[in-house]
Length: 112
Length: 116
Image 1 (cartoon, chains in turn purple, orange):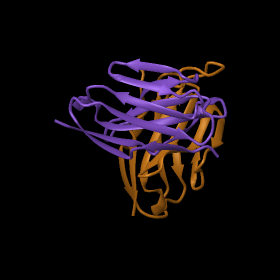
Image 2: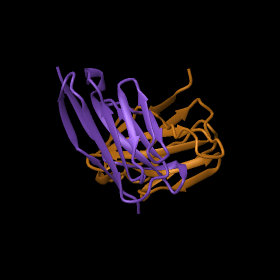
Image 3: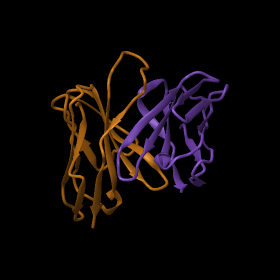
Image 4: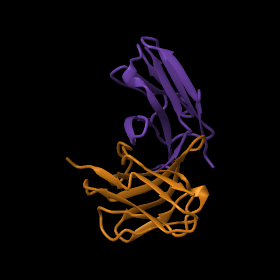
């Protein structure tokens, strides 16, 4: 079965610094989704990547999917306290967006 | 505004009791999902539904059941709660577009269940 591995598990970053979170799949991804979870709340959709080499940006967050469609990275530029939370990647299972397989999440703490 | 709500947000129960977690969405989405979130495991799919009267088992469905009598609601029932079911439960919904759409799931705020 497909597995998603996220790294690092947790990250403490000084405010203003850049950071990268990775999501690696054991199989080719049909679609890769990034979500953010604030502590004690539900998940908020950030971006979806489908094509090899695709890159999307939203404000200061950029996500990329590699050419082989097995690894995605989420990059935050000039981090802010509002970026703190848990970032999860989800993979489209067998071409259906109705069921996603999830990574374990990366906990991001921003130090002022 | 359309939304998805879960209740209760916090629940403490005893082993062996039946527990029902409610999920209500006002987006008129066909697809609804129940996940549990545990440290180190991320989100795991419990049950899902593609429409009224449709229910399907997910990855970790043992000990859980759902029913879909209307579009808006997908209650999750733990027939006989066990300590291993202590977790945070998330309900989510998404629309059907006949193909791969934005992949956007709309999540509730979660229900924290403790089984003693």
